[in-house]
Image (cartoon, rainbow, N blue to C red; front, top):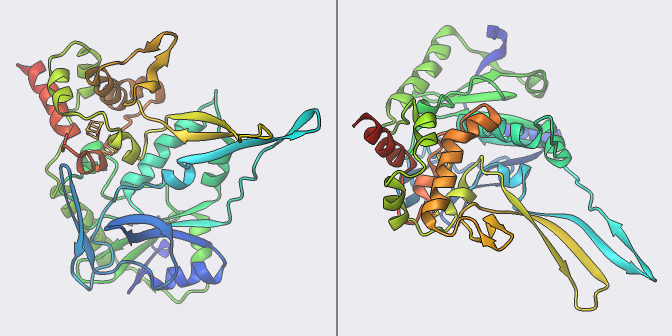
Length: 366
Ligand code: SF4
Ligand code: SF4
């Protein structure tokens, strides 16, 4: 990138003001029910001065340094809530004399900016892009929403205790996939980098100070320090290790703790399974079909003729972890995990995918 695409700004507010002035719907971080959620925001709405504390089975949003803008990282929601909604009506049908008419709802998506997307979340969108448009299947709604969304990323200046993006090569600095990127500098202010023509167009006419080499180096130093602060890792050979571990005793050990609650799949930014539900009203005059998120941790998920194929928690956890870290490579050419740490923080019993992976790797070495 040329230096003309790098600037220094004191706060992110001018960007939010510009987006509002140009009629963008902006979705960004908003505290709700004690957690960072992704909802519509306007200028002045960023939760400045907040931080988070995350451990296995624990998440707390807390007051932090009042001068910092983005010292919290990912919460329970991810951007898939917008791109791949948890409940989406596919069609409705109404009785019409002796027949019926079917109506597909419009899939309106106003021009939208995702503001505050973390690097691991850009990676998660890239993974879901392969799921929802892979040559043999293309979800038109997802594709349109994705294509028409401006991405403003925030490189992480702080990692939660549960983060391991550095081990998965998905962060803490975004290397692409954004229109604009912000890095909050240690000494205050932001390095603002342009990643696309749409990002450059948004800045057009704003009075921005150019970034010098010292600002660029300060931004890189923030990312290096954030990566160095992460303690969790992922064994490099975990894909072949899990491929050969179908009968490993570790599955029983994790199943003894796992509640099969499905939290890990719901918070995961890459999990993509869905089901369809049909309903009618009591008169039989109106019927609807909805697509809803599903999870490989439910008994119904693997129900085929005669019952559920995966009756035990052991088999469901094995399916989830083996798909995520191993067979995902065969299916989509990447890992299904970005190292966001959500499944660790939001597992009610604190099961940690990195600890489980380490246990499989250790037994292989032994
Ligand atoms: S498996 Fe866990 S750490 Fe990996 S992307 Fe999903 S929620 Fe994040
Ligand atoms: S691993 Fe944790 S979050 Fe996932 S189903 Fe089991 S208990 Fe629930």
